[in-house]
Figure (cartoon, rainbow, N blue to C red):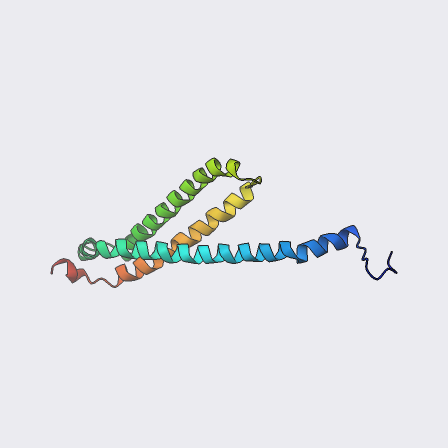
Length: 147
C-alpha cells in the first residue's frame, strides 16, 4: 500500500499525532486563548470593584490612620474583602457547575486537581485585584478624616 500514490498509511501513533496536531490542537489553543482572556478580564473587573469599594471607604480609612491603626491592618481589611469575594465567586461557580454539567451533551469531568488549580488561580486573581485598592488606601492622608 505504501507504493500507491493516492493512499497513505499511518501507524496508530502516527494517526494520533496527526489528529492531535490538526483540528484538536487548533481547538485546544482557541480554548486556551479564551481562558486567558477571561482570566485577565475577571482580574480587571474584580480590581475595579475592589478599587470602587475602597473609594467609598476613604473617610473611614483616613479615620483609622488618624487613630493610629497600622498600615498592615488596613491592607489586611482590603485583602480580606477581596479574598472573600473570590471565595464566594468560586463557590457560586462550583455550585452552578454541579447543576449544569450533567445537562451538557458531552460528559464534563472535573477532577480534584482541576478544582485545586482553579482555586489557586482565584486566590491569585483576588490578591492581584486587591493591589489597586491597597495602593489607593495607602495614599490616604490621616488628616482627610477631619476635613
